[in-house]
Image 1 (cartoon, one colour):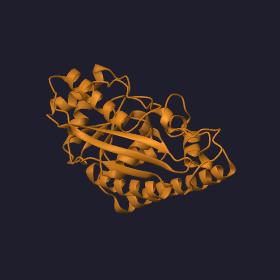
Image 2 (cartoon, rainbow, N blue to C red):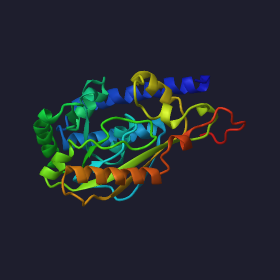
Image 3 (cartoon, rainbow, N blue to C red):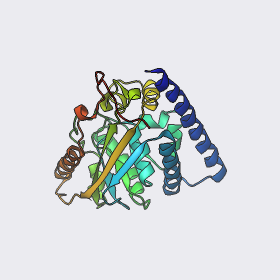
Length: 271
């Protein structure tokens, strides 16, 4: 990491932690209710955080008002950016609840935490939590890939959470997001797949620090139509996966297209 990138990382990391602490203080003062009211409160803070960190977010399509929404999953940033677009009730892996500050904040919005690999025995409790989330009046967002990826493509969807969509007669809409990175001297050698996407065995703290040193990080979010093919969870999940994969491809979502090469003699634009 270059010196300017390191300085930027330190500065923005300090601002980020400061804003999370400020959000915690405001919560204790205002005490919004858990669930929908908490999600609206978090939405306001996510908008501020995205603006302060300098992320550019472009939204396409009709933003959902309710029901279920599914998306591809690339990074911990996905939750922050979707929440900045509008209030959602999120579905996240149980590990998120244990993250310092971030875990506490996400729980305020009535986030449904799902244990990965829980199997059929966990479905009744998860479906009950999902049913309650659907009655919150907000759209419920989940990531059926079940893990984050490097952005090379969209993985097959896990079918477990689609039970709750069918059982509760909830309309299901698709969404996709793609990150891009501006060509900039500060970003030389960085790529979307390695420095924005967070996957595999990447360390969380070191990745956040490196990410905040980048300049010109942007994301495009597209909301699609409702999925009407609902014969069973197999048809529903496979049709939804195909829709999301097509949307992601249409957004230009390949790792190769979103890297900043080391050997460019001239990098254009600074912000």
